[in-house]
Amino acid sequence: MIPINLIQSTAETLMDKAAIEIPQDYLDGLQVAAKTEDGDLASFVLKAMLENYEAAKEDRRAMCGDTGVPRWFVKMGNEASVEGGMIALEAALRRATASATNGVPLRPNRVHPLWRTDHNNNVGIGAPEIEYGFEPGGEWIDLITVHKGGLFGSDYRMLFPSDGVQGIKRFYLDSLMAFGKRGLACQPAIIGIGLGGSKDICMSLGKRASTLRIVGSQNSDPEVAKMEAEFKEIGNSIGMGAMGFVGKNMVIDCNIEVGYCHTGGMPMSVHAFCLSSRRAVARIHADGRVEHRTDPDWFTPYQRRETVDWPAAQEAAE
Amino acid sequence: MSIREVRLSTTPTDEAIADLRLGDIVYLDGLMYTAREGVYMRALEDKANIPMELPSKSAANFHCSPAARINPDGSFDMGAVTATASFRFAKWLPEWMAKTGAKLIVGKGGMTSKDYKDYFVPNGAVYLSTVGYGTGALLGRGVESVEAVHWNEELGVAQAMWVLKCNKMGPFIVASDMNGDCLFERENAKIAENVERVYEGTIPATLKRYGESDDRTDEVI
Image (cartoon, rainbow over all chains, first blue to last red; front, top):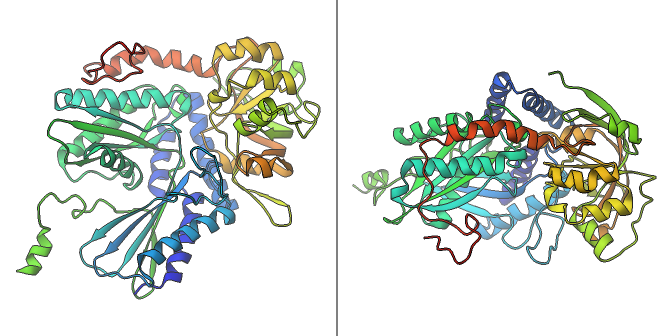
């Protein structure tokens, strides 16, 4: 049984870390970009960003004034149980979101879409989003917070099998061009592409590809992994860099996730996880141990399974 | 090309503004206030009295809402500060400039050269862009103190009018000049030369969307 107080205190720590500390994998990627960048303005921008991450950590101040919209991904081992149940867990995550908004402080970004009501705590109808995943075995629970920013950089389109890879490439480039100009996507970014699923799942696959996979990771399907490498290369050959200035670094990494879709279609989404790629992860064990990390490790073989039964479950049954 | 750095007052002289060149890096000193859609609507549409003396106190309008906290005792804690995209405020800016004498519009992503020529240049104003975007911690360090927060009750923390005392606050990039030229459009033009090559071999989507055609009598299938 995982104590509810431990969930809330860990969640508060995660909110703080996500807002302030740039994840190491993204930082490594940006440092490589800064070394290769030869556009003078783009190069200045990347150096300023690297200084900014240092300043944020030193001052324990949010790295960006737009602190995004906090959301939660919760993954549980099959044997995990939470004191008070899942209602208590959701309350703890909402409390942690509200208290960190005042504590860090974060910008209270969440408002009602029509009435613009702001509770000044990033909590409201459907906010923060809480999404779930499960893994076979284990009494742990993973808390992942992502504070994705941006009104720009994401798009969806229904493509068809006849559009093929060249159609996928066109929509990918269109998204980079549309939102990269003037740097509205806050690039260089981790670009996530969702392919397949139904429309809503296509969007969440792409969002998860950008936010829940680290720089340097590869899709487990070698052909998809090849596309990821090719798309990163194409994105960086546009000639556009940070802030839309002439440069060669638009994409720190490109992650693609797929889901089975309607036989007639090939839906696609594109997402950009920005220069402040805010995510933080902790695993809480049943014995009270808490391990912090920056890799959500969301896309396990179980999450990408395509058979009716999960082989491990089959084995156990036999 | 070496990048030039400039210290600039938030109540700048016409000479100081005329001296700025596209791509200069600017650090600001003096008072700067935040104003975005909430403040514009309240001041220009609801005709509320602007609660500070402009432009004598400040001629710098920041398109920003800070990550900040108003404490129960009324004091303020300022964390990170970054700008929001400015293009959507074009609707209010001409009237705002005429009314407040703003000379520095500070935000994200700039405006069009048409905006600059139409009402920035005639008002002796230029656009400064934040850098990154998202040097929020660096900009936060440049805020020496929060002088006041106006209209917090009416507009909330994110839309309120924050008055910031800047001390070498930056970096910002000069994105327009007294010719009405636009830094981002200059960069777009350079990048445009390469676009055809990058798109080579790609194909347009089978299913079109309105927006790609603005003629609603067209079919998009």
